[in-house]
Length: 299
Ligand code: XIL
Image 1: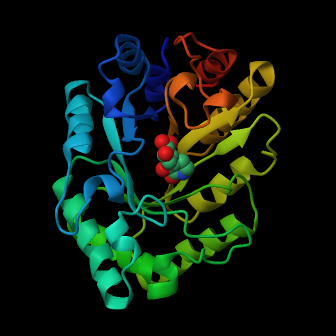
Image 2: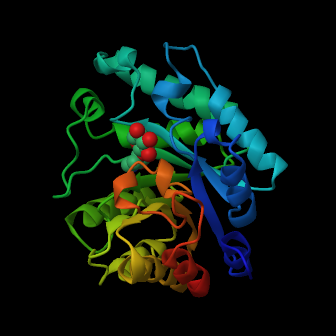
Image 3: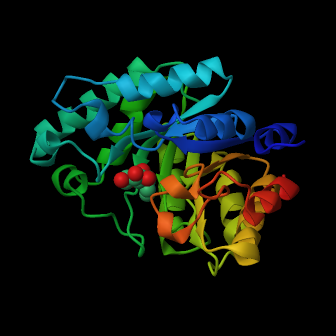
Protein backbone atom coordinates (compact mmCIF):
# COMPACT_ATOMS: atom_id res chain seq x y z
CA UNK A 1 0.00 0.00 0.00
CA UNK A 2 0.92 3.63 -0.37
CA UNK A 3 0.91 4.80 3.23
CA UNK A 4 2.36 3.62 6.54
CA UNK A 5 -1.04 2.96 8.11
CA UNK A 6 -2.49 1.10 5.14
CA UNK A 7 0.64 -1.00 4.68
CA UNK A 8 0.76 -1.87 8.36
CA UNK A 9 -2.93 -2.78 8.25
CA UNK A 10 -2.31 -5.16 5.34
CA UNK A 11 0.09 -6.92 7.67
CA UNK A 12 -2.38 -6.94 10.55
CA UNK A 13 -0.51 -4.15 12.36
CA UNK A 14 -1.17 -0.53 13.25
CA UNK A 15 1.19 2.37 12.54
CA UNK A 16 0.82 5.20 15.02
CA UNK A 17 2.26 8.54 16.08
CA UNK A 18 2.51 10.53 19.31
CA UNK A 19 0.33 13.61 18.97
CA UNK A 20 -0.10 16.92 20.77
CA UNK A 21 -3.63 18.35 20.49
CA UNK A 22 -2.38 21.92 20.03
CA UNK A 23 -0.83 21.02 16.65
CA UNK A 24 -3.99 19.52 15.14
CA UNK A 25 -4.97 22.93 13.82
CA UNK A 26 -1.83 23.06 11.65
CA UNK A 27 -2.94 21.90 8.21
CA UNK A 28 0.21 19.99 7.22
CA UNK A 29 0.32 18.28 10.63
CA UNK A 30 -3.28 17.09 10.36
CA UNK A 31 -2.93 16.15 6.69
CA UNK A 32 0.12 14.01 7.38
CA UNK A 33 -1.51 12.39 10.39
CA UNK A 34 -4.69 11.60 8.47
CA UNK A 35 -2.87 10.26 5.43
CA UNK A 36 -0.24 8.09 7.07
CA UNK A 37 -1.31 6.91 10.52
CA UNK A 38 -4.10 4.73 11.91
CA UNK A 39 -3.28 4.95 15.62
CA UNK A 40 -2.37 7.81 17.94
CA UNK A 41 -1.06 8.27 21.45
CA UNK A 42 -0.95 11.47 23.49
CA UNK A 43 2.63 12.72 23.73
CA UNK A 44 1.81 14.41 27.05
CA UNK A 45 -1.95 15.01 27.37
CA UNK A 46 -2.82 11.81 29.26
CA UNK A 47 0.03 11.93 31.77
CA UNK A 48 -0.61 12.32 35.50
CA UNK A 49 0.30 16.03 35.70
CA UNK A 50 -2.01 16.86 32.78
CA UNK A 51 -4.99 14.74 33.83
CA UNK A 52 -5.06 15.28 37.61
CA UNK A 53 -3.59 18.71 38.37
CA UNK A 54 -5.20 18.67 41.83
CA UNK A 55 -5.96 15.47 43.68
CA UNK A 56 -9.32 14.06 42.64
CA UNK A 57 -9.89 16.89 40.16
CA UNK A 58 -9.45 15.55 36.68
CA UNK A 59 -8.82 17.46 33.48
CA UNK A 60 -9.46 15.38 30.39
CA UNK A 61 -9.61 18.21 27.87
CA UNK A 62 -6.48 17.33 25.87
CA UNK A 63 -7.03 13.59 25.99
CA UNK A 64 -10.70 13.90 25.07
CA UNK A 65 -9.77 16.02 22.07
CA UNK A 66 -7.42 13.31 20.85
CA UNK A 67 -9.92 10.51 21.43
CA UNK A 68 -12.61 12.44 19.54
CA UNK A 69 -10.19 13.08 16.69
CA UNK A 70 -9.27 9.40 16.55
CA UNK A 71 -12.92 8.35 16.51
CA UNK A 72 -13.67 10.79 13.71
CA UNK A 73 -10.76 9.47 11.65
CA UNK A 74 -11.03 5.78 12.43
CA UNK A 75 -7.80 5.61 14.38
CA UNK A 76 -6.97 3.51 17.43
CA UNK A 77 -5.74 5.21 20.62
CA UNK A 78 -2.94 3.97 22.85
CA UNK A 79 -3.04 5.20 26.43
CA UNK A 80 0.16 6.75 27.82
CA UNK A 81 0.75 6.61 30.75
CA UNK A 82 -1.03 5.89 34.02
CA UNK A 83 1.92 5.72 36.43
CA UNK A 84 5.43 7.11 35.89
CA UNK A 85 8.09 8.69 38.09
CA UNK A 86 8.22 11.72 35.78
CA UNK A 87 5.55 14.31 35.00
CA UNK A 88 3.76 13.68 38.26
CA UNK A 89 1.75 16.64 39.59
CA UNK A 90 3.44 18.53 42.42
CA UNK A 91 0.78 17.41 44.90
CA UNK A 92 1.65 13.73 44.38
CA UNK A 93 5.41 14.15 44.61
CA UNK A 94 5.36 14.87 48.33
CA UNK A 95 3.01 12.08 49.39
CA UNK A 96 4.18 9.17 51.51
CA UNK A 97 3.03 5.67 52.40
CA UNK A 98 -0.65 4.81 52.13
CA UNK A 99 -1.51 8.32 50.95
CA UNK A 100 0.70 7.83 47.88
CA UNK A 101 -0.73 4.36 47.29
CA UNK A 102 -4.28 5.76 47.42
CA UNK A 103 -3.29 8.61 45.13
CA UNK A 104 -1.85 6.16 42.60
CA UNK A 105 -4.85 3.84 42.55
CA UNK A 106 -7.25 6.80 42.59
CA UNK A 107 -5.47 8.25 39.58
CA UNK A 108 -5.61 4.98 37.67
CA UNK A 109 -9.29 4.53 38.50
CA UNK A 110 -10.12 8.13 37.48
CA UNK A 111 -8.30 8.09 34.16
CA UNK A 112 -8.74 4.50 33.00
CA UNK A 113 -12.46 4.46 33.80
CA UNK A 114 -12.98 7.79 32.02
CA UNK A 115 -11.49 6.30 28.85
CA UNK A 116 -12.93 2.83 29.35
CA UNK A 117 -13.54 1.06 26.06
CA UNK A 118 -11.70 3.69 24.01
CA UNK A 119 -8.09 2.69 24.53
CA UNK A 120 -6.49 -0.21 22.65
CA UNK A 121 -3.68 -0.61 25.18
CA UNK A 122 -2.59 1.33 28.24
CA UNK A 123 0.98 1.88 29.34
CA UNK A 124 0.00 1.17 32.92
CA UNK A 125 3.50 1.58 34.32
CA UNK A 126 6.34 3.40 32.56
CA UNK A 127 10.10 3.15 33.16
CA UNK A 128 10.26 1.41 36.55
CA UNK A 129 13.62 -0.33 36.01
CA UNK A 130 17.26 0.79 35.85
CA UNK A 131 19.82 -0.35 33.28
CA UNK A 132 21.18 -2.99 35.65
CA UNK A 133 17.73 -4.51 36.15
CA UNK A 134 17.17 -3.11 39.61
CA UNK A 135 14.07 -1.12 40.43
CA UNK A 136 14.32 2.61 39.81
CA UNK A 137 14.34 4.38 43.16
CA UNK A 138 11.34 6.58 42.40
CA UNK A 139 8.98 7.96 45.03
CA UNK A 140 6.66 5.04 44.20
CA UNK A 141 9.36 2.43 44.75
CA UNK A 142 10.77 4.06 47.89
CA UNK A 143 7.39 4.67 49.49
CA UNK A 144 5.47 1.59 48.37
CA UNK A 145 8.06 -1.13 47.79
CA UNK A 146 8.05 -3.73 45.02
CA UNK A 147 4.27 -4.30 45.11
CA UNK A 148 3.33 -0.97 43.55
CA UNK A 149 3.64 -2.21 39.97
CA UNK A 150 1.26 -5.13 40.38
CA UNK A 151 -1.12 -2.94 42.38
CA UNK A 152 -1.17 -0.52 39.45
CA UNK A 153 -1.98 -3.31 36.98
CA UNK A 154 -4.79 -4.64 39.21
CA UNK A 155 -6.29 -1.15 39.49
CA UNK A 156 -6.10 -0.68 35.72
CA UNK A 157 -7.75 -4.06 35.10
CA UNK A 158 -10.63 -3.10 37.39
CA UNK A 159 -11.08 0.31 35.74
CA UNK A 160 -10.84 -0.76 32.09
CA UNK A 161 -11.22 -4.49 31.50
CA UNK A 162 -11.28 -3.89 27.71
CA UNK A 163 -7.87 -2.31 27.26
CA UNK A 164 -4.73 -4.35 26.98
CA UNK A 165 -2.44 -3.54 29.88
CA UNK A 166 1.22 -2.92 29.08
CA UNK A 167 4.47 -2.37 30.92
CA UNK A 168 6.54 0.16 28.91
CA UNK A 169 10.25 1.04 29.06
CA UNK A 170 13.33 2.23 27.13
CA UNK A 171 16.78 0.68 26.85
CA UNK A 172 15.15 -2.67 26.20
CA UNK A 173 16.37 -2.86 22.61
CA UNK A 174 17.95 -6.26 22.99
CA UNK A 175 18.55 -9.03 25.47
CA UNK A 176 20.17 -7.16 28.37
CA UNK A 177 19.97 -6.78 32.14
CA UNK A 178 17.02 -4.40 31.97
CA UNK A 179 14.95 -6.48 29.56
CA UNK A 180 15.85 -9.58 31.62
CA UNK A 181 14.35 -7.95 34.72
CA UNK A 182 11.16 -7.03 32.86
CA UNK A 183 10.97 -10.53 31.42
CA UNK A 184 11.25 -11.98 34.93
CA UNK A 185 8.50 -9.63 36.12
CA UNK A 186 6.15 -10.82 33.35
CA UNK A 187 6.86 -14.45 34.21
CA UNK A 188 6.18 -13.72 37.88
CA UNK A 189 2.96 -11.80 37.12
CA UNK A 190 1.66 -14.63 34.97
CA UNK A 191 2.50 -17.21 37.63
CA UNK A 192 0.61 -15.25 40.28
CA UNK A 193 -2.31 -14.12 38.12
CA UNK A 194 -1.42 -10.43 38.02
CA UNK A 195 -3.02 -9.01 34.84
CA UNK A 196 -0.53 -8.05 32.11
CA UNK A 197 -1.20 -8.28 28.38
CA UNK A 198 1.64 -6.52 26.64
CA UNK A 199 5.11 -5.05 26.88
CA UNK A 200 5.96 -1.75 25.21
CA UNK A 201 9.45 -1.19 23.82
CA UNK A 202 9.98 2.55 23.54
CA UNK A 203 12.87 2.17 21.07
CA UNK A 204 14.50 5.60 21.32
CA UNK A 205 17.57 4.90 19.20
CA UNK A 206 20.56 6.38 17.43
CA UNK A 207 21.87 5.53 13.98
CA UNK A 208 24.61 3.39 15.55
CA UNK A 209 22.37 1.49 18.00
CA UNK A 210 23.19 -2.21 18.38
CA UNK A 211 20.10 -4.10 17.28
CA UNK A 212 21.71 -7.52 17.04
CA UNK A 213 19.28 -9.06 19.54
CA UNK A 214 16.34 -6.68 19.03
CA UNK A 215 14.06 -9.20 17.32
CA UNK A 216 15.16 -12.06 19.58
CA UNK A 217 14.19 -9.94 22.56
CA UNK A 218 10.73 -9.14 21.18
CA UNK A 219 10.27 -12.82 20.37
CA UNK A 220 11.11 -14.08 23.85
CA UNK A 221 8.43 -11.83 25.34
CA UNK A 222 5.93 -12.86 22.67
CA UNK A 223 6.71 -16.48 23.51
CA UNK A 224 5.47 -15.80 27.05
CA UNK A 225 2.05 -15.05 25.58
CA UNK A 226 2.04 -11.27 25.84
CA UNK A 227 1.75 -8.86 22.90
CA UNK A 228 4.73 -6.66 22.16
CA UNK A 229 4.47 -3.12 20.80
CA UNK A 230 7.04 -0.62 19.52
CA UNK A 231 5.73 2.37 21.44
CA UNK A 232 7.95 5.45 20.99
CA UNK A 233 10.21 4.83 18.02
CA UNK A 234 12.62 7.55 16.98
CA UNK A 235 16.18 7.34 15.65
CA UNK A 236 18.69 10.19 15.85
CA UNK A 237 20.62 10.82 12.66
CA UNK A 238 19.93 11.17 8.97
CA UNK A 239 20.19 9.54 5.58
CA UNK A 240 20.79 5.86 5.00
CA UNK A 241 22.17 5.11 8.48
CA UNK A 242 18.99 6.38 10.09
CA UNK A 243 16.82 4.69 7.47
CA UNK A 244 18.57 1.37 8.07
CA UNK A 245 17.77 1.43 11.77
CA UNK A 246 14.11 2.22 11.08
CA UNK A 247 14.05 -0.64 8.58
CA UNK A 248 15.56 -3.12 11.05
CA UNK A 249 13.01 -2.24 13.74
CA UNK A 250 10.09 -2.46 11.30
CA UNK A 251 11.24 -5.84 9.99
CA UNK A 252 11.70 -7.15 13.52
CA UNK A 253 8.12 -6.25 14.41
CA UNK A 254 6.76 -7.88 11.26
CA UNK A 255 8.80 -11.01 11.96
CA UNK A 256 7.23 -11.43 15.41
CA UNK A 257 3.61 -12.54 15.20
CA UNK A 258 2.62 -10.90 18.46
CA UNK A 259 4.18 -7.54 17.60
CA UNK A 260 0.90 -5.71 17.07
CA UNK A 261 2.18 -2.37 15.83
CA UNK A 262 4.62 0.50 15.78
CA UNK A 263 4.23 4.03 17.13
CA UNK A 264 6.72 6.76 16.22
CA UNK A 265 7.25 9.47 18.83
CA UNK A 266 5.96 12.33 16.72
CA UNK A 267 5.27 13.17 13.09
CA UNK A 268 7.73 15.88 12.13
CA UNK A 269 11.29 16.63 13.23
CA UNK A 270 10.27 20.19 13.99
CA UNK A 271 8.16 19.14 17.00
CA UNK A 272 10.24 16.19 18.18
CA UNK A 273 11.39 16.11 21.81
CA UNK A 274 14.79 15.25 20.24
CA UNK A 275 14.43 17.90 17.53
CA UNK A 276 18.14 18.63 16.97
CA UNK A 277 18.64 14.93 16.30
CA UNK A 278 16.04 14.92 13.49
CA UNK A 279 14.80 11.47 14.61
CA UNK A 280 11.46 11.13 12.81
CA UNK A 281 10.11 10.08 9.41
CA UNK A 282 9.09 13.54 8.16
CA UNK A 283 11.39 16.56 8.15
CA UNK A 284 10.47 19.98 9.46
CA UNK A 285 8.56 20.73 6.25
CA UNK A 286 6.63 17.44 6.35
CA UNK A 287 8.70 16.01 3.51
CA UNK A 288 9.19 12.24 3.56
CA UNK A 289 12.72 11.30 4.56
CA UNK A 290 14.79 8.32 3.44
CA UNK A 291 13.73 6.72 6.72
CA UNK A 292 10.08 6.98 5.65
CA UNK A 293 10.77 5.12 2.42
CA UNK A 294 12.66 2.42 4.31
CA UNK A 295 9.77 1.85 6.71
CA UNK A 296 7.19 1.83 3.92
CA UNK A 297 9.25 -0.69 1.94
CA UNK A 298 9.66 -2.91 4.98
CA UNK A 299 5.93 -2.88 5.81
C1 XIL B 1 8.40 13.17 26.48
C2 XIL B 1 7.66 14.15 25.58
O1 XIL B 1 7.95 13.83 24.24
C3 XIL B 1 8.08 15.56 25.90
O2 XIL B 1 7.26 16.49 25.19
C4 XIL B 1 7.97 15.85 27.40
O3 XIL B 1 8.49 17.11 27.69
C5 XIL B 1 8.72 14.80 28.20
O4 XIL B 1 8.23 13.49 27.84
N1 XIL B 1 9.66 8.32 27.48
C6 XIL B 1 8.29 8.42 27.58
C7 XIL B 1 7.60 9.62 27.03
O5 XIL B 1 7.64 7.48 28.03
O6 XIL B 1 6.46 9.97 27.78
C8 XIL B 1 8.54 10.82 26.95
O7 XIL B 1 7.86 11.87 26.28
C9 XIL B 1 9.81 10.44 26.23
C10 XIL B 1 10.53 9.35 26.97
